[in-house]
Image (cartoon, rainbow, N blue to C red; front, top):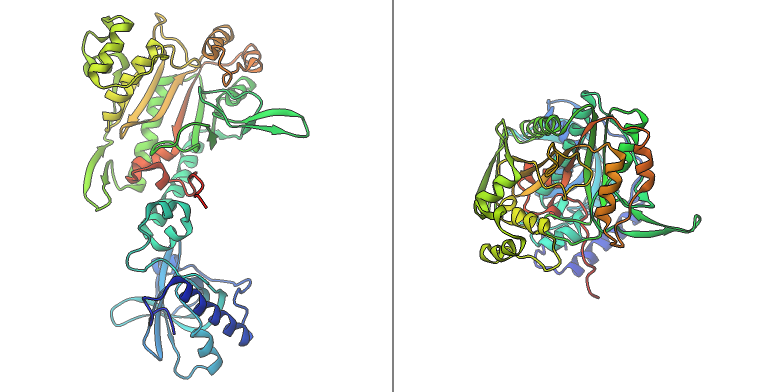
Amino acid sequence: MSEAESPQSTEAELIAVRREKLARLRELGIDPYGARFETTTTPGELRADFAEGRAVTVAGRITALRDMGKSVFFQLSDALGAIQGYIGLKGMEEERVAAWKCLDRGDWIGITGETFLTRTGEPTVKVESFTVLSKSLRPMPDKFHGLADRETKYRKRHLDLMGNPESTALFVARSRMLAEIRDFFQARGFLEVETPMLQDVAGGAAARPFETHHNALGMPLTLRIAPELFLKRLLVGGFTKIFELNRNFRNEGISRRHNPEFTMLEAYWAFSDFERMADLVEELVCHLAEKFCGGLKIEHKDEEGNVTRVIDLSRPWRRANYHDLIKTAAGEDFFDLTPEQRRAKCDELGVQISPEMEDYEVVQQVFEKLVEEKTFDPCFVTRVASELIPLAKVSPGGKTIEVYELIINGQEISPGYSELNDPDAQRERLEHQAGGEEEQKVDYDFIETLEHGMPPAGGIGIGIDRLVMMLTGAPTIRDVVLFPLLKRKAD
């Protein structure tokens, strides 16, 4: 009995059959879990650079099998591509035929043979010899329907990658985008650096950290919520163009836009400012779109493949004042109202607020719900309230800060600042932000570092997961993170 002959078999029955085949391979003196296997190419490379009559050695997973008795066609695949193989069993040694009959979809094999084109023009390898590299004991997802259940996709990503070529292509694209981002910054003279993920004071953002403890030192530590304060220490030390591409951790909610650990890029450019950093981000995102998306119009589709939105990244991108955008959405008189009247206005606008929110937080909530979530084409929102970001330089006049917030696809993709480098002003603003809350502590060592002199600089952060969501059309952050955090399933 084989899987192909019994499509209605239960998983337990299929596993039992595969275990019988595993035992049979061992009876034949074949190690079903292989060893080192030297290849001359990969399935994807071979198909992309195909020529007839080449002797090749290639390895991959069998992802399709068409057994016609004495002739078998199969597909050999890995994450980066696939090639067809053909093996003729007529005239083959009996033990080798028996070994081949023990193979199923999902098994890994290595093959040696010669390339040719079939009558239909399909690039193919005619197998002269094969080596079993790993016998799969569980069946692959259905080859026609893939893996459809979204929770299973996230919990068992290996099955998603086996059964859904679109998922594999997305994560390959993500990896290549990260490499391109590194190349982009390095080509412009930025040095890649690494800063601590374990910190004794969680700084650089207003967020609740994950807490841990170092036994040998006997001290509490947190996982970093942002690398900003350490990167600025490097500016003080004399590095003038730096970036870091790594993980941040925030002990907060999970949603379609939030995962507790996420990938962030931060970059700092001495003697620059927020406007120059905005230009840099615009150039980067458009470069990625043209390289990986084929242009500056990005289609977003629903699960049925229908286009729901087209994001237009054509340059130059819009730049708009924070207060002007809110007045357009909430009324020209919004900032003429008293704080109590603004709260009442939120009820009229359908914006939920909580009693403990300060007035600037109420205003920010209006911005997020009525402006940010409804802005899909790129917009640099500038001149935001000074209370929102304590690490940015205050604009002349003192009521706003030299900041942009880049909104694309209804969410913030990147903030950028003219960095605050006055140590006394920085101390005052961080102490005000802390406000006695337990999770907020002031990093006085950072303040002391600033007293040694930090050059004026522009800085940016880019949420890589959200950027990939926007460029690929993925609906949730879980679709662009290989292993998103999920609640443990009940026993």
